[in-house]
Image (cartoon, rainbow over the protein chains, first blue to last red):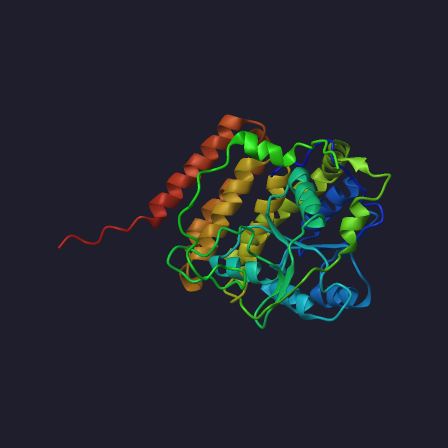
Length: 198
Length: 157
């Protein structure tokens, strides 16, 4: 999933994107990529105090942020954003991070961001992730300890030997099949339209 | 996570992406590559400046000096990588790892110095344009850091 379909068509001309980076040059790089993608408005943020005011006052369609800004205060900013009642509480957020200290990996996961992209970023990867979060159908989860998109991508049931924590997890083993598998012809019959006389 | 509230927000981004009059991804990527190239010179000058700032910070006794070194090397790692300067980015990443894994009061200053030397060498025109020399600089750095991190032999008993 590292490059988008070259023929995929998208439109960012009416989108306002907030880019938050501590380094002026990284801010330039991300902004230039977004400019190439045709983003309608690119708002740059270099200081969290100013960024906090912006997100409280108006909606953005996308936020791209390096949470290591201001000694890691960006992580707190994102967590607070998701818990806020402001206009960007559910705005898609892409974290862009460089080298990450091991303690910060869990912090990034718990912020409620939609996606994490590791630097160095390339235009192809950034565009792919923007298209992904734009079409992301994951539900949001709100719990006392986490607010953000459901972090469970896969639905493979609870690990062996564990009781599932989801309300939809089966509480008893399914057991072995009692009948043989359906044949290919039987399966096709499900999808083949047939004329019927009434 | 039982007891959580599940809901489906409707972000505007999804609707905007699908509006008519957009562009093809291949065109967008070409435009983005061109736009990034426009700022290459400025960013590379910034990297040179950051290398010198790392050296200055590494000589400081200020409590925040090593954090500053880490932040600057992290920026070099990210920004050099965008422009395909793989070796430069790799050396900066190695410095990040060194600074992140060491206890703050035990970071060997000489290890930072050899990283800075490698970064400077990779930015010199003669090395920057010669792949063999770039590879040699990285190999030399690896050998030096391995020697530094190896346990030193104690006095014979």
